[in-house]
Length: 396
Ligand code: FES
Ligand SMILES: [Fe+2]
Image (tube, rainbow, N blue to C red; front, side):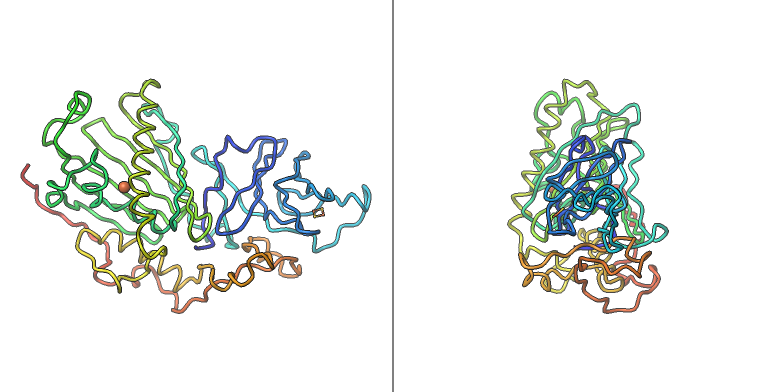
């Protein structure tokens, strides 16, 4: 699990007038919406006696601990200690980690790390969201699998021929090909031409003609461990699934998905669309949850890859660089002996800005970088370098 990234903590509509608990990167956080409607995110550990702020209440722009009523504002400052009275003094150390928060695409994004704003990778773009011409629906899925594996599954198109009968068929697997590929420092995109299965049913025959190919555009973003999958069925008929895959802990992932479709936009088709979206998650989960090891291997050392896997290798290389060169990986094994005995927190930007404060909580241990940080372009091996792979038209 990596720090210094934006992650989705909750759906916007869930956080109303009460604090809400959210678990990310193995730690607990509290989300609350103040009287002005602004959402804040704090570490969910009261500095007094470790109370869970999520069990408390909201007072104007503060959340109050349910145990002895200490109040914290959105910057994590204690503003009121009831036992000291209205104007009672507040110790300088009475500050909890607070995390930058944004609402985008119906989701609450929190930046879990201490990087200054100028150094953060942005929240991934989703230009079609909220635009006319698209029908939107939300879906959510919890996996007993690591988030890195969930992302890899989301961008792996070769499995569609085997796992998702609606997208592909084993008999057409060899015909599918990668048309183009692009890799940037924190994201990658590619296009795959896929051959659909034989058509059954009037609705499907109506959507696509026999032997018509489908263009699929999967992208990954380190930010939010997000995946965007656009499927162009025929001109003007597309679906886009944008999902943020939040690492709850090393073994659990919560996926927040928004699906847009440019056809059958009447709400009467929502139920069926949602059912199909959830069915795809179920089909994927049966495979991903049974895959070993739980961790996504960072290298290809103990696996065998073929050309079709090169886009996933890009995802792995992106992660690996931020582990080996940036030192962003939480050392979960070092945390294990402390489980239940000591509370940690994710470092927040205020820690860098206020080095004079002796913070009450310790931050999670990180695996130190093992390599010198190099400019992005120099880090890629030939096998990983982005290039446009042009493959001639495949006869239908
Ligand atoms: S534990 Fe929170 S106020 Fe005492
Ligand atoms: Fe899948």
